[in-house]
Length: 185
Image (cartoon, rainbow, N blue to C red; front, side, top):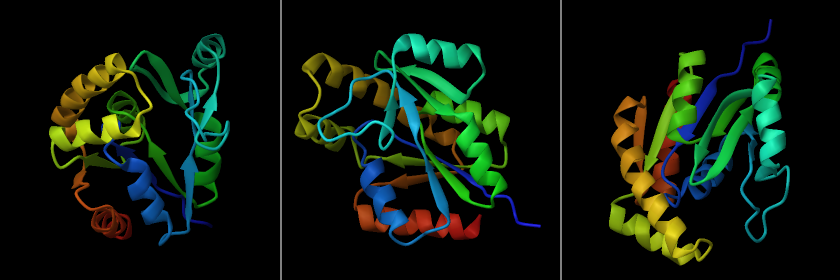
């Protein structure tokens, strides 16, 4: 009988470097499936539907919520995000670990439904560094940056509810810390 996979919930404020850190983790760990979330936000330059996100309409999103097709879902910075349930359950049953890059509200929902999930919060070294990163991306207008910074303050306060907090002051070091967590789970 094949061992069931584990769920690793990864959260952190927008701009904290989650994608960079996880890319480094995945260079050294291969028994995983990265859960692709659905979102109602517009794709950023270079993003592909079905790769970074499934880009869907608010109407489609609401229909999926109604049908119970999300493991978790939430609104963040005026957009909806959710983790489709089917692919996660399928990979876990195959013995594959599933990584979810989801925000704090969604992480609480997954942790409540799957208490055995390992939660990891990636924190920026400081709010000043986070603001520089957000502005440096040049993907959001000033209004959205201010919303993201305000949200980041609330999310960082919630990090005490995670199993692990990893500060991303250096992405290679942070990835190494996450690999240690994975191997210890």
